[in-house]
Length: 169
Image (spheres, rainbow, N blue to C red):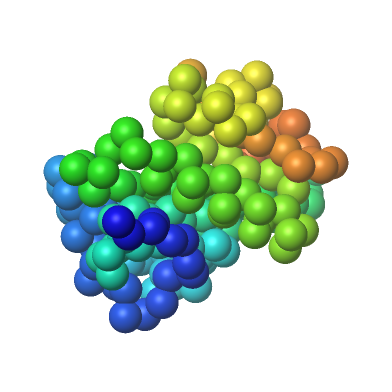
């Protein structure tokens, strides 16, 4: 029996990551978003889950800023998280989130934002209440935030440009 491992994504993982994203979401949008975020230098933490030498999961946190009172506070956006469909329910997604959070905290990050299922992301500490004060193009019930220290609770969320160009395509 093999063991799943999590490691930082490398350039040679690009095609495998693209396939995981396409399989998980059933479309090309998220894979294009990942390609754009990485190529534009906006990736902060990017990890892959590997089983039997195959990439079966992927997570990306990109740079996000909270603009408030003329200042910018650096934060991160979790998008996307993807697991090969035949590995759903095995804990790979949760393992990727937990490992990425450790790396982000160790790197001094203070705030993470996600647009996703509140029941799923709530398990990792994300909450709608923490994100409710932000002005965002994505402001809705699925917008959640998690703070690891002192971080703004209001202001305008400014995502990497790939979010507006890739998701509009």
